[in-house]
Image 1 (cartoon, rainbow, N blue to C red):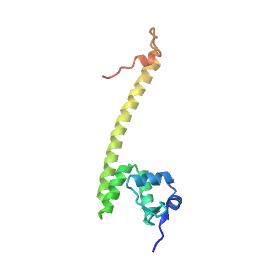
Image 2 (cartoon, one colour; image 1 turned 180 degrees about the vertical axis):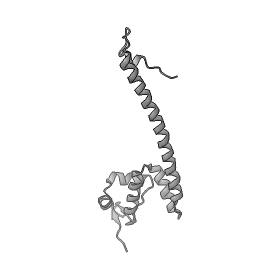
Image 3 (cartoon, rainbow, N blue to C red; image 1 turned 45 degrees about the horizontal axis):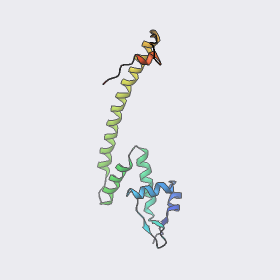
Length: 138
């Protein structure tokens, strides 16, 4: 029989703060049993589960997404299809952000170049006449 881990031991083995472990448990990502003294007792498998959570976070998965993956696993299914789908969604989102950031960079470069060659004169009340030339979209 394997010995259950108290939260401090789990924290030490996984290098995850006790508060984070409690938070993971409140989200249903981790499970413990309470001893007669009220202490949380985790199965030895909790170490692997916490390491899985950390690895999934390292590649950009939210705790909610990690919960979906763990839930599927707990039901006896292999969640790799879900993981691949979530990952593809993240890649698509990053590609869209790259396009937006590239467009924004071009816009900023345009302002820089225009302002370098044409310094507008301040009007009464202007804070910075350069920024005053920026058009706001409705």
